[in-house]
Image 1 (tube, helix red, strand yellow):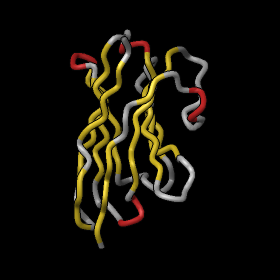
Image 2 (cartoon, one colour):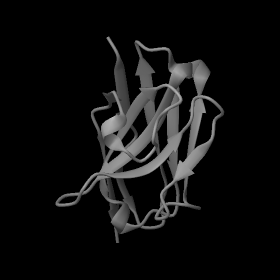
Image 3 (cartoon, rainbow, N blue to C red):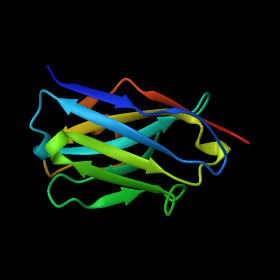
Image 4 (cartoon, helix red, strand yellow):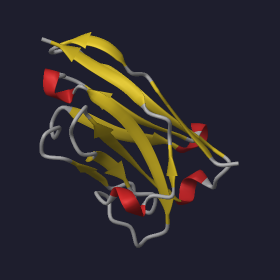
Length: 125
């Protein structure tokens, strides 16, 4: 059974940091492109960041560029999202998602096969 387990969310003050983890099991992790999406109440799901399985390329939404860093530890089958300089507008449920293959579009959430359960990030002002 394929599972993506997202964790690391919490309550933090503006300017603070959190590190989210997405632990994968039941799949060939090295073959999977992993992304982080987020969804705030009343808003659409939006892509935050993703990392390519083929060459480790990373991509970021403009709203988080320079503040968030995505990384992968293949030995632990885990992708991390380091979030620094957090802002109240970063408040959302964060989900990790995975899809295999080279023909993928980082920002298209419907293209992902597997999803984690979500972890809440709340940034207070």
